[in-house]
Length: 147
Image (cartoon, rainbow, N blue to C red; front, side, top):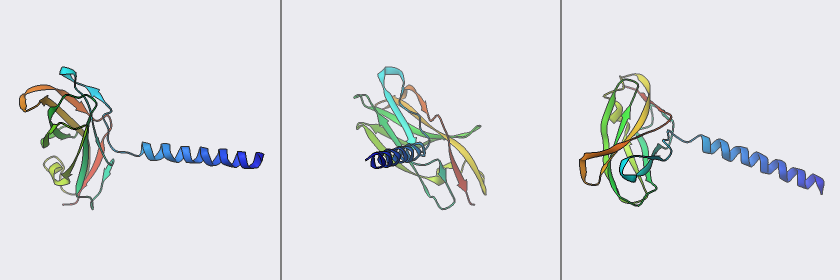
């Protein structure tokens, strides 16, 4: 009986380590952050690496408050930004955008790779002149440009 319990405990421990490793392997993520006017949101990617064969970057916007807002998704490296690569209205709790990797090419030279942060610019719903704040990923993703 002790052997079965010990084996079960070891199996459970291994599974926990595996689940933790898989969870940690997600993409660039801001975590939930608050901006003006009481909005709390998060932006994240599905991966931290987009290689030569990857054509799309999946970016998800989530909100934890009920009020709707408009937004722009932007990509930044250490010196430049391309903005907006996508705009939208956040009326549901989550929205995923499939963004063409070529939207990075204005700030990513041919035959190179770069590290990028995602910026979510939050605005009053339907009014891109009333800016509430920016939410940025805490870590980066890497993209490779073949040509």
